[in-house]
Amino acid sequence: MGEAIDSVRAQAGDKPRGPDDSRKASTNGGRAGLAQGAVRNEGDEMVMPFPVKITHVLDGDTIRGTIELPWGVGLVDRPIWLLGYDAWEMHKRRGREEISPEEIVKGKAARDALVGLVREAKAAVVENSHGLDYDVYGRVLASLKLFIAGDWIDVATWMVVSGHCRPERSKATADELREHSERCLWNEAVAL
Image (cartoon, rainbow, N blue to C red; front, side, top):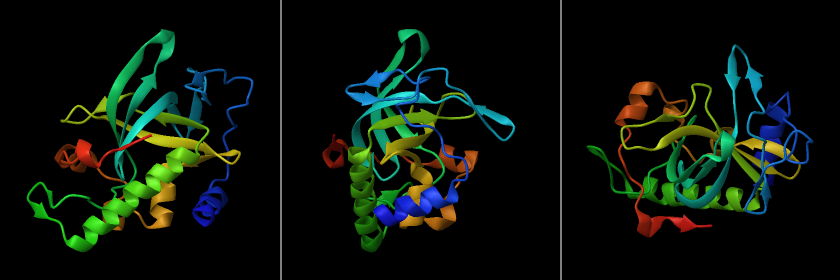
């Protein structure tokens, strides 16, 4: 895991500040988080991160948690589909597509890798430059950033570098997001 984190750090030219930054005062169940309203500019898009308390990792690209919004509002116990990559599948079917036993093994490894990454994190935020969007299944669509060992790690980049996703389906299009089938079964979710 350490080599993948180092690789992600090397790719990131501009490192966001950590949770001890004076602009970041929110705590999240004992975990520090970015203050609501700490907007950063990413190219021509404004990105606003929101602290998230992750309660479950459902598979390699879906988590469940509570997102802290401004003014004390929260999206409580919501499924969140992570943008920027498509993890290997854990279940026998994806829509009409049959999944091979080899991919199912990779899917479980992707979930376990995400569990390890989340458990190692001191803080977590979700962000989406288009505001908080939802897919047809009611999942929040957002990128996930984790604060690990003094740096913010982009989970999508880490999963790609670590080989835990389908390379041809990384950076999914809006059409692919809509077609993404519900596959988060509670009996395979890992509570954190």
